[in-house]
Length: 591
Image (cartoon, rainbow, N blue to C red; front, side):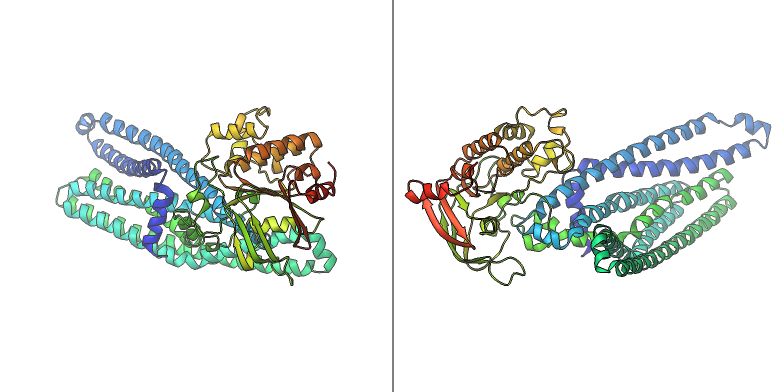
């Protein structure tokens, strides 16, 4: 990626919503460093001046100690306050940006076929959402802030020394800028290979360690445990070598900075001695000159440490940039990044057109006009399957219809819903489906607040809208100690099965799509809870198309059309009022 692309991504990440915090953090960091330089220079001058003044009684009595003392106290307090404010503001901005980014990427990866790809690479998404996003904090905290501070310090040092001699000020300001702009890229180039290797090998090591722990019993039974141990040991050895290379690169950077600092201080001593010889400054001002130059190299050390991990940051940007760029365009593509997302596929809208469902969706709670579902000669197969799971399927579901897919277990009901949701690509034929939301058999809830679990479906929904859908789903009277901020346990711990299903329904209601796909929505619920839930679903469906896979009579009786599947083929397609409708309905399992 080019430097311009990095700068664009930095602006996109940090200046889009947190501009004031970002600018305030840079200003406070610069003020902190400037106060530190002034404090060291003034303290050195004060100590030297008092020592000279104490040589004689007359000068000792005439020397004013109160002015410099007040200046030192002011700089000390200013530095402390600025440091506290800088840490508070910069970390607040960074953590807020990274938290927003995790949410954006999670929703961006919630695409059709995401769950299947996640099963193939379970650790990859975790690394994208943790390791890679954490690496992006270097862009601001460890690169942008120290770089701005280095420029500010170079200007201050040039100003201070320019008061003594303009040539001296200009030289040292230029020297500080050149050193800063040379050391940082040099350190980045030197450490980049080892930083990238550390990141890749660290991820591989953690993946193998997780596989070893989770599959220990299977490995032991198959006799592969020693082999897995040996493979993990090789990964650890390679990671240790990469760490050694990285530490050597860091030591080289420290040595180079030390050399440049020493040269600068030596030149400052020579310049101070020359000015003293001409009688233009005294020993106190000479001390101020040398200490100001020494202190001016402080932000360079922070910048060098930030550039030490630039390879890791660059790798994270390369991995995340396609998704970040897709989030700012009207037509994100699921193929732009193969990383999937876990969770309820009900969160993943699907459209047969290339446009983003989120881009064209209307306001929350108001679905777009429904369109028909058309399958003509469509063939669907599970990845790696030798035969088609749904062979040559012809199906037309008009907009607004209520359809129940029935048949015995393994007949292809859930597979057809998967195809309509975009989880199975069509191998042949025509497949035209409008944006849809899929309520799967399993309700996936996260260890987070009620608000956060709901906003996975619509991150722009306000609290009033969230309370509305909770009430519509029958959770309006649910006792929540902290309201929408009430935190659920892992997997929705703290809610009953019925309450968890209702929360999933509330999340379903937030999605502004025209088709609902329901897979056995009341399975494992008692009859009373199931009746209320079904009445709620079909009462709130409005003009939406509802396609439901079921083998329960209580669910199918809400449909106006029954489609029976056997081995992936449609054997019966009847509507309410047809004599076969009641016959098929009576063949289903009783409530």
